[in-house]
Structures are given as structure tokens and as C-alpha cells.
Image (cartoon, rainbow, N blue to C red; front, side):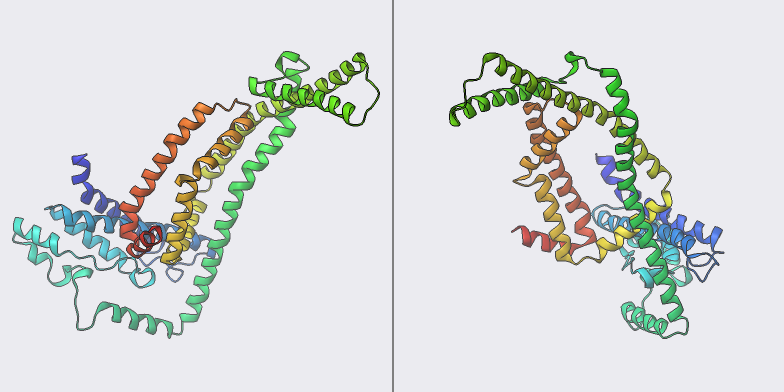
Length: 399
């Protein structure tokens, strides 16, 4: 644990550095060492949407990992000259995209520079002149004012309207691709489950089981339910006889009615048993179909990640806090055990298993606690850095 903790700055910076290298490779191999945009290469809208997804994904990685690096660097002392070189490389890569995405803000290198200076007096030479990183450049006006002025200039250029239309089309195509992929992830497994179950699995199960009476019930719970239904039927016959003062029914007629009802109940539960067995194989085929869709949709996955990031980062702080409280209360809140109980009993019935109350209660006593710990760790480790105001809003709403 100590080694993992003390390696946090290097690990976070290395991941940001690798993401910057991916962006640089895409620029070199597909855009002629130019910025990843529609102006740098003659690509179709779908192809540009593909590269834009990779760009957004890696810029997000850089943002998150640099935030982690800044936080851990303030706790630990690091004295590696390669840190400065990696930060300079990251600055050079993200400089082209800072105005558009506003991902990198105030990457302060003063503590790192001070540490390196104590170990090597030549560090000052690396921080002067052309080698000075973007985050250390200063001017008469704050950089935020300069970015605003450049943004206004860009909006008034002759190409601004064309650029806006291109960006709109790219965003529209990415949204359509993301929604189609999400719908595909839902429809393909469901269709696979229903079609395979009705056309292939059910006929095979029915032919194998046949009319074997010993295979009617899969578990004792089904047998108890069948007995309860039969007892209710017998009591209903007696009640009708007493209420409506019907003629006394012979014992042979009563036995015949009960026998017909027993055969009807047995047929219903035999069908339930076959259906439960079919569900197991149909679920496996659905899982395989889902895995195939995931394996063959790497481009769509990148676009969906970017689409979700855009939605999440576009929410207000109160909306983020509301969603966090909603999900945590549903899955790990005070009333969540009742929901987990219904889900587990439904899953057991779906698979033809007996709903063991001890196993269900043991699961409810452990799994929501683990989920609650994961939520709290995520809030402590990531939300406090990505959106401190959302964290403050969350605490106020909890109180």
C-alpha cells in the first residue's frame, strides 16, 4: 500500500503522458502533424466523428490524471527530471485544444521546479526562454481575458459559420451514433433471448422432458405452491356448496373435479419448469450476443463515452448532486433492502431456483455495504477534484 501510494504522482503523470502521445500519434499519422479537426484533413463526417471521439477521450484522461497528479504532488515530494519533460510534452499537445475544450487550467509547476532546482542547478535553464511551459507563461493581462478575446476574434472570422456548421454536424452524428449503439445494446440481447427461446430452446427442452411426472417441479417451492392452489380449490368447492345450498355432490364427482384441477395445475407448473430451464440457456446466448456487439463496436464505445462525458459535465452542480443521491438511496439507502429482495426473488424464479431466504438476507447484508463504500470512495477520490462545487452541494443536500 505504501508503494502504491508513493507511486501515485508518477502513475498519474504517466497515464496523462501516454494519452498525450496517443493524440500526437493520431495527428502525425492521419492529420499531417496538424490539429485534429476537419480543416486539417479531408475526411467524411463519420470518420471525423471517430477521431473526435478518440480526442475527447484522451483529453478527458489528461484532465483527470493531471488533477490527480497535482493533488498527490502537494502531499509527496518528487525529484525526477523526467517529470518536467513529460509536463512540457503534455503542454505542447494540449495547447492546440485548450481554447475549445477548456480542459487544462493552471498546471502549476512551481513546487516541481523548486524540488528539481535543489537537486540540479541547471533546472532554471529549462524554465527560461522557449522551453518555458505554457502554464508558466505570464503577461500583462490574465490568460482568461486573452482566451476570451481570441474566442471573440474566432467567432467573427469568415470561417466561423462554416466551422460552426461542421461542428454541429459532427455533434449530431455522434449523438445519433451513440443513441443507435445504446438501443442496439438493449434490442440485440432481448431479441436473441426471445427468438432463441421460442424457436430453438423451448422445443428441445419440451421434447427431452416429455410427460415425465417426476420432472414437473424443479424445486420444493414450486411443489408447495401447487399444493396450496389445490387446497384453495377444494376449499372453494366446499364454500360454494355451503353458500348456494347446492345439492350434495358425490364423493366420486368431487374426486373427479380435484383430479382435473390437479392435472391442470401440473401442466401449468410443468410449463413453468420448462420455461425456467429455457431461460438459463437463452440468457447465456443473450450474454454472448451482448459480448459480440461490444467486441465489434470499439468506435461506437468511444463515441458513447464522449457522449456521456458531455452530458455529465454539462449538468449543473445541483443536478449532479441530485442524481448521486437518487442512485445511492435506491441501491444503498434505507429502503433499498426491500428492492434487493424483490430483485433476487424475481431472479431466482426466472432461473427456476428456490428463493433461499438466508442467502438473500446475507447478500443484502453485504453487497449494498460494498456499494456504499465504493460510492464514498469515488466521491472522496474523484468528485472532490472534478467538481468541488458539486461535492459541496451534495453535502448540503444530505444535511
